[in-house]
Length: 166
Image: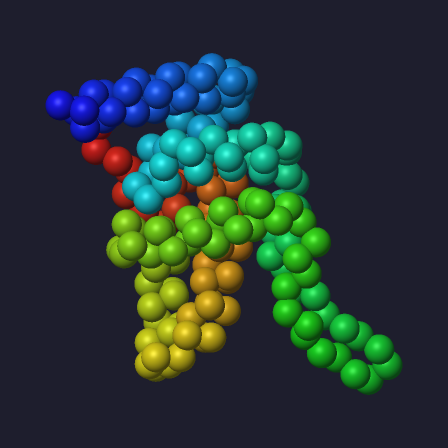
């Protein structure tokens, strides 16, 4: 009996938190959040975080999106020496971490999308090489951010992506 009462209390608290979270999101961000949450593999919380922390501003091109989250290459050019130093990590740390988690869920829930096919093709011959998969997932996260920006800006659904059934 006590466990049932405890479960009912937790469900009430979760409902109150969900209502408060939805009430705190402004109307323009709510529209972007709803649009993002329609895609399979993107939940309400992740969509609201992206709408509030990344897509609240206007971007002119895909490079600005990548630079805002810090998922762009950082080259080192000095004289004849040209070395790629990895990603810049200059952008929003929370959004970058969220996008990497979303990239993993995107691969799971959108296996027929162009991003998932690109990842699978890229990591196909690596076997158990976890480092290659981690490097590739960062690229998927950057491409996913750009695809979601295009989806919100122009209404273009990412290639091969599926919407949630209502």
